[in-house]
Amino acid sequence: MASLPLQSGDLGVQMGVIAAYLVVALAVGLLAYRVTSREAEDYYLASRSMGTVVLLFTTFATLLSAFTFFGGPDLAFNAGPEWILVMGLMDGILFAILWYVVGYKQWLVGRTQGYVTLGEMLGDRFGSTGLRALVAGISLFWLFPYVMLQQMGAGEALVGLTDGVVPYWAGAALITVFMIIYVVLAGLRGVAWTDTIQGLFMLTVTWAAVAWVLVAVGGPSAATSALAETNPDFLALGGGAGSFDLFTLSGGGLYSAKWMVSSAITIAFGVAMFPQINQRFFVAKSDRVLKRSFALWPVLVLLLFVPAFMLGSWARGLGVTVPEGGNVVPALLNEYTPVWFAALVIAGAMAAMMSSSDSMLLSGSSYLTRDIYRPLVDPDASSQREGWVARAGVVAFAVIAFVASLFRPGSLVQVGDTAFGGYAQLALPVIVALYWTRTNRNGMIAGLVGSQAFYLAHVFSPLPATYFGWDFALYGMLLGLVLTVGVSAVTSPTADEKTTRFTEGLRAD
Amino acid sequence: MHRKSGTFLWTFAFVVLVVLAIPWFLWGDSRVVAGLPLWLWWHIGWMGLATAVFYAFTQSGWDEMMGVTRG
Image (tube, rainbow over all chains, first blue to last red; front, side, top):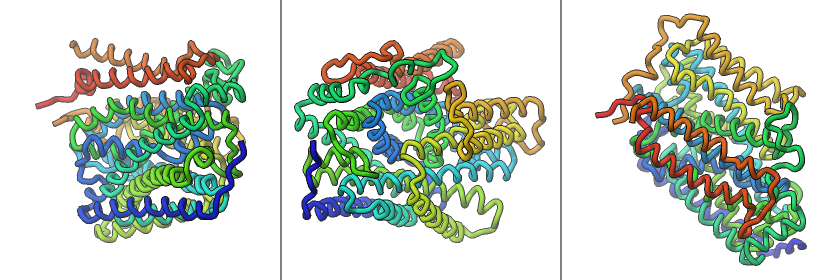
């Protein structure tokens, strides 16, 4: 089917809808700003007072990045909808379990000791400012590609929506400016409030988009039949002959069994270590909030990802053409829905990406000031000065990421995957530290440095992407685990380590 | 429930949820039921089941497994 030519008035409608949405989001943020005190704990953690709906949606909206909303459908468009299963395993189940194993544990420890960041928690437990700064530094490093991912996603979304009339750099610049204004002014409470609105909005418009497209093409059976005619292999689970490779020593390509398992594991563990997600583990009002969010998680994943990724796959069968450098979702909506509606969906997706970026930048700035600036640079800094360092950090970080995003170093899924894998390297040493009292500082440093070195060497050099078909990120995680446990077992803790800090005296009420 | 056996059962339940989240027995299967691939229906059912199991866990195993004291 040929793409409908855009009318001259369409651009005005599209930009109007997107601008209106962004202004509403900003207004909510400013409202939140009025009730936010300037104290650090309130700024970062909204006073540990987040209820179920807000916590669930704020975490959910943070996951709703360009990676899931544009990268996922693009992948489904190019290779089939199996990505739904990877996301289900990863987000619906593995992440929920980590929500308990890492999240509940951190909540318990955090409320007893008053921690606000992962680095602070580990630095105190192991009596080491160096470890604290190391954890913060690693986290900030991998934040960079992830912020960049949102900027790339926004740029590509507007290219897809306007058929290239709005250039890529303009979309990326728009989201950069908006997220800076937002984070600098509003803090976490503002972010959490808009996250809730954006999460609900995204769920609603995604289903509306599916309904609209399916009505236009004659229902899911017709859409799936069209796909079965053009790409019958898309409907068969897996990547074709030989892709079930779990019991072989090779394989590992797209939609092979090993690839699906590798992706799900590295991303789930990576997500748990994301600054913006990990910091959420400290903010729940009560354990009841954590429990409810945990149980609702798989359903929310189901409600969002099935329609989003099926849209991508159906678009293939419907012969949708994607403009150079654009995404499939806006291209599909442009063909089957009115201009204003397509713009509304893209506005929702951009808003979701902004909430991801806002949360990331905010958490990143707290890592920067609390774990690096204050302990290493200026221990006597006033809280006002700390606030300015945080804001300057956000601006610098967002601007540098924007410049890097202009070079477009890879697809959305590739860039996202690199960031997730980098965070995933943190997860196993942290889990060992949370549960095993014999973990010591030497073990932690060996595990963190060893796994990061291994991972970085693979990202920035032509070393193989898989060994025996399994992703190198998994080997890095394993190396981190072995080093943390092994070195802790053969060395002794120093006198200032508090070995029982994470295990004794934990109370839920 | 005795703490050790409860921990074992919950761990087992979680492992099953993880292992069968991808329906390996439908690998290569392209059957379509009611407009969606059969394996996608499995996914939909499995996420529903996971929510039910997770809810049950919050009602009984949540604190015991973490060794948290209350009151």
